[in-house]
Each structure stands twice: as C-alpha cells, then as structure tokens.
Length: 256
Ligand code: PGA
Image (cartoon, rainbow, N blue to C red; front, side):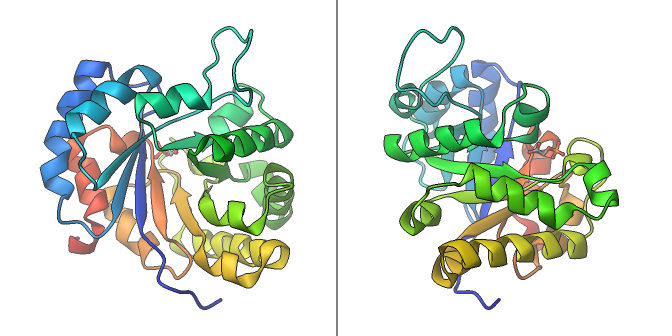
C-alpha cells in the first residue's frame, strides 16, 4: 500500500524499571542526545515517575511521556488500579495498552483491552495498542489469523476518527526480551497485513495514516534495517530503552 508521510515515533517502554530519581537523571541525559532526531520520542514510564519526568522535561516538545497501562473505569473500588484522568493530570499524553506482558502474565483479554482503549480515547490519552502472535501460533502458520482476531476485538466499535488517533505496535511475543528479532521482512509482512486489514475495516485513508511500530528485541544494530521497511513507522523498545546511549542510538538510527 502506498503511504502519505507518516510521523516516525520511537517509544521506550521501561516496564518495571527506574525510580523517580533514576528516571529524572535519564531524561536529563537523553534530551540533548535526541534533540536533532527526526523521530518523536515517547517514553512509557512507571506511574510514580510520570510527574517528576514531565517536570524535568519542562515543556521539551521532542519527548512525550506516557504510562504503560490503565483501567477502563473512570474511578471506583478497584484496588491497585489507576484511571486515565489520574495519568493525564500527572502529565501523561499516551498509554500503552494490551502489551503482551499484560495479555500473557496478567491475563488481559482483547475485550478488556477494547474497553481501556475507549476510555483512554475519551480521556484524551493516545493509546499505543499492542498485538502479536506467540511462537506456537507463528509456527502453525496462524500469524495473520491471530493479528486479525486481536485487531478486530481490541479495536471493536471504534470510529475511523478514533482509529486515526491510535498507534499500533506489532510485537511478536517470541521476540520480546528474547534477543530474537523478527527479520525486517517478517516484520514488514505483519505490518503490511495489519495496515491492509485496518484499511478493509476503517478505510484506506485511515490505514495510510496510522503509525505502526515494531517491537521485540530492537537494538541499535537492527533499528535501521527495520525502519527502512515501507510499513514500519516506529519502534517500541523495551530493554534497550533503559540505557541513555543505547536508546539514543536507536532514536538516531538514521546516523547508523
Ligand atoms: P524488548 O521489549 O525490546 O525488551 O524485547 C519490547 C517490548 O516489550 O515492548
């Protein structure tokens, strides 16, 4: 599918790493290193670090701060959960939803994630919604079927305008934290499939605009070969986003 110029968004997902002090030191060191990059930098940080990091960035327009999860309710008796409006007030602009660790370790279903996506959009947070097949599903030749099912249910009931506001992350489960990256062609095939499927459901214009990130063992030495693929518009980086030098090399992949 041909595409209009889509923004490049490179996101770090810190998972359960970094205290507030460590996070502030990190962004203070990162900011000058990525200031010239053509990519927008997103950081999905632990809840307790959102506000301190936003304050430390002091309006820096190149780095956007977000969360890694939220609840689908506005508020209520849900011990240990967090609401979108709380994230927003802390300074978050986006939220990662449906990450494979949420799906596989914490048992979140696509139907539940669908409710969270709707709540995030209603709250004014940009969702980065994750999809991806397990190794078993890939080896059985079911990758496209799995992606189709996950996208259908997770984005069920969204209008084209809403779909246009989200970022999608294709993250094959077998590539997350394992050191095994999908080859650029495997990733491109999955991205192309997702884009076509979104086009069939919500229209070609939305499909040509939507940003699709790849995630799963992205490192400085494979970032560029992934990013040159037609349908890969950004990266969602876990382990390699925890170190300033390593992450800034990925953000500046064009110089590699
Ligand atoms: P990884 O994680 O880069 O450590 O493989 C990616 C992710 O979970 O988003």
